[in-house]
Length: 415
Image: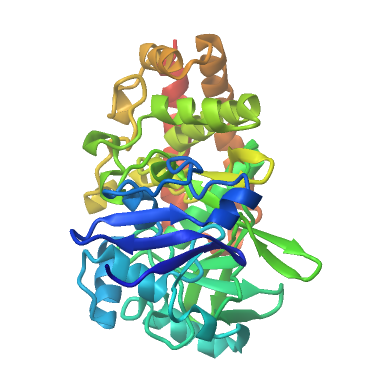
């Protein structure tokens, strides 16, 4: 058997992860966790005494890791095989999404107790510039950060004045997202879409744009962190792929990933606020459609797994992808609406079929689509002329033009 990784939620040992002789993931809950807690590591891994063998737990843990180019660079820098999920978790699985952390069992007692290092504006700028070559600062002693997704990110602690890098067990509370390479204005795009979502009524975390010298980045408050009297508390969460035991490489519906019907079923069956959360998820679907976010897949929705029970987390990664059609990005939806993946082909019958598939009354769906479409451009225009006036750029002009035209077409197509 290979080395064992302690799987922890906050300061408590949840269980142990190891590989069998065939390199398959095996996970077993700790007896004390089973005795004292009602929170599962994942909805796909219900509490039980028997171990999860034969890769049953692999999807949950694989979804904690970065993807695509960022993963390739980290693996190369750490001299770990690209597809060695266990090896990557062993090296960078410290401050992950939610409250989960993984440490080699033999090294846990010798781990660094934790500290924050204050970053000057120039230091932060230098770290951000180096992220393409050093994602998540992998390899720096005492830094063990892992965030899912393909985009470059940097977890930091922010006290409303200064940014800090967390070492050891000290948690981050914000995420810095630089511009996506080869796409213009993604910082302004996502900041605007997140602000627009808040104005429309969606639950989204706080976001703002930070600029120093020539570097402009998006700063996002972590919804899986809670400020308490003695510091920052991690909140356990998982994305929908984890909850449904789907590996990250299959996150798109066409590859076997979650459909909207599956997502609504998960919320309806799991959430302790299922009525509210079903409506919230409906608003998320409509909003993503109207802003042209075709990359809204199962890893871009999460559940908080709290002592009182699961509930839908704040929405994140709201970005208009369709305004980058000139870069060759596919317009097709990550999850079909009423069986249709081509956004411009969606008509009233598709929304009605979607309503039947997800168990929502068609009248409610059609009313929500119409109301949001009629409201979104006006609200966006107020943001564009107000809070985002200092950040005006070609990307935001294209975004405003797209949202206005798409909203009008959507209303006409419902007739």
